[in-house]
Length: 219
Image (cartoon, rainbow, N blue to C red; front, side, top):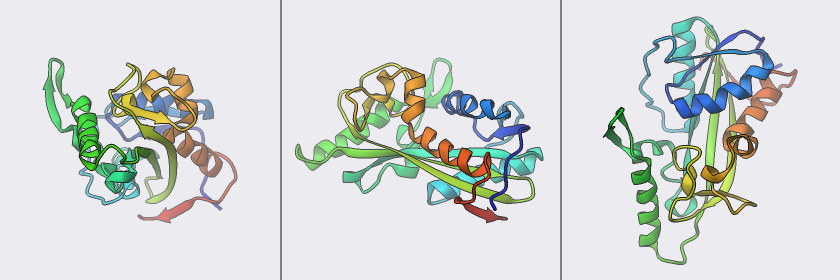
């Protein structure tokens, strides 16, 4: 039987404000008192994994060990079929580090331009189907962990549209819609996003009596 997560304090192992805004509302209805790794002053571990799951587990285990309370980490990215699944786990790296008026950050418009440039090089008939992947890793201080994966299928458009969301949202049109993620009301996006899909699996596996997820001990 999968280990259940009791209502209590939970660390969201992220310093990404956009992710925090999406994750907190999904967990709080289940009695979770969410505190971020940034709130606790926890360091960001090096993401040395080669898959979304490996990187999510690195972050979750580090936060759980440092805080002494259960932690959840998200690793997500855009995968483009014609690019062999790239940028994938390097989604954020494609944005590179940039300096802005408010301090260091990432240039997501540059990242979207890189994806579009590579597709353009492949020719006008290149398929533009893609998907967002989200892997959630839940870890306890004793080393127990569980992994949940969600996806949102869609296609890429250019130029970017919309001012909501973050990351690659302005160029991603979810299957069955004509609007980009950045044109959707946040509540509507949350219902159909890759993160919502992963959280539905987490709810079924860790917040209810269900045992169909991939659980690992001491990973």
